Length: 168
Image (cartoon, rainbow, N blue to C red; front, side):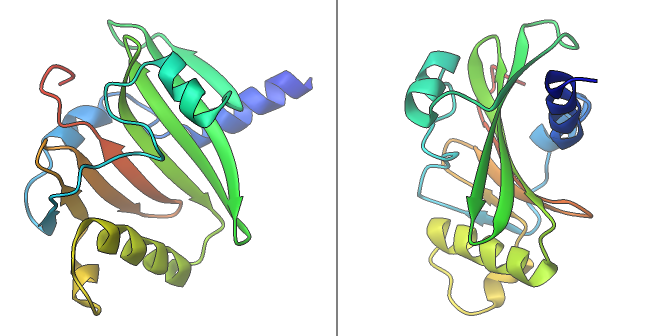
């Protein structure tokens, strides 16, 4: 049982979504509880449509590079790990046919109150809403139909999905 195998198992557990079928559901997310934003949605400092080399140029070499064979086109996930204010974050950039289309921040062992504070910061970045009224929203959509949504179950996640019709 070696180090490489342990890493692979760890990143397989962090992989979100575990099954690619979830993307179809997310592309069809309704407009309920949605904030419209004039600011383009970006993940870390990469843009939807960037290729693997561009992502590595901007974010550096990933901690783990996973290739999946469950889609018709080549599908890979680049994993990055960060620690901010004692919070462990596993970020993933998903590429289909070498095109970035989905990103996700997975927060490990984060209490709900801190997640709400992070969610507030994200919403305030994309929408000019003050006070607590913004907490009723769970999606942000920009003018290109790119989405940010918050998965608020056992492990907390912030997800970024392209609005590009070609990916659907």
